[in-house]
Image (cartoon, rainbow, N blue to C red; front, side, top):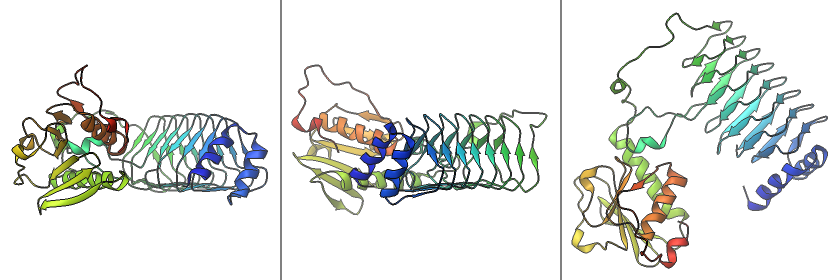
Length: 335
C-alpha cells in the first residue's frame, strides 16, 4: 500500500460516513447502497468491498488486511479490532460481529451468512510467537472458516486452522481447538480443566525451524536497511556490512566459529541461537535466552529495536549503557 492511499484512508477516520464512502469509491473500492461507516472508526485495507446496507459502528479498528469484505446487511459493532498484514477477512451477508471482539487475520477469516460472533470473542489465525526464537512452543498459522447460521457465545476463542460447520452453536467461554461438524452444539465438559506437564507441548518447533526464522529476519534486515551489503565468510557464516563500518555476523551452525581477535567490541555484533555461541567481549545476541551479552553500543541498540519491531523478539541487555557513553551519529537512524 502506497503512502498516499494509506494517508487518505487514515484521514477518512474523521469524516462523516457519506464523504468517507465517496472517497472510497474514488479510490476504486466497491461500496454498495445504504452503507454506513461511523466517524472515529479506522479502516485501512488494500481492497475494501461493502455490500448494500453494511454498517461499521464507531471506534472500530480494521488495519491492513489485503481484503476487507462485508456482505449485504452485515454489521460490525463498536470497539472491534480486526488486525493483520496480508490476510483476508470476508463477512458474508447478514453476519454480525459484536462488541469488543478481536480478529487476528495473519491468515484468512471467513464468517458465513447470518452467523454471529458474541461480545469479546477472539478468532486467532496466528498461532506463532516471538518465543519461537528461544522456546519450542507449537507454531502455526491457518485460516478460520465459520459456516452459515452459526452463533458463538460471549468470550469464545477459536484457534488457527479451524473449520466450523453450518448451524453450529458454541456456548459462552468455549475454546474451539478442533473442527466442528454441521448441526452441533459445543458445551462445557464436566471437568473443564486438565493439567499436563509443559514438556509435553514443547514439540512444535525444532532447532532447524528456529534457525531458519533467525536467518529470515537477518535477510529482512538487509533488505530494509539503507546501504547494507551482505556476503559470506564461508558457507557457515553470513555477515552484513552497515554504513559507518558496522558489521553483523550470523553463524549458521554450532560448528561455525568466529575469531574474537578480529572483531571490534564497538562496531561488530553477532547473532547466535545458543549461549555456547556467545563471544566474550563482543556484543552477542543470544536468541535462546533473548539476552544481549557483551557491551552495549548504539549499533546493538538499533538491532534490538529492529528485532522488537520486525521480529517479535524482545531482547534485554545484560549490561546497561553508561551515562557517559556518547551516542554515535547512526544511533538515531533506523535499520
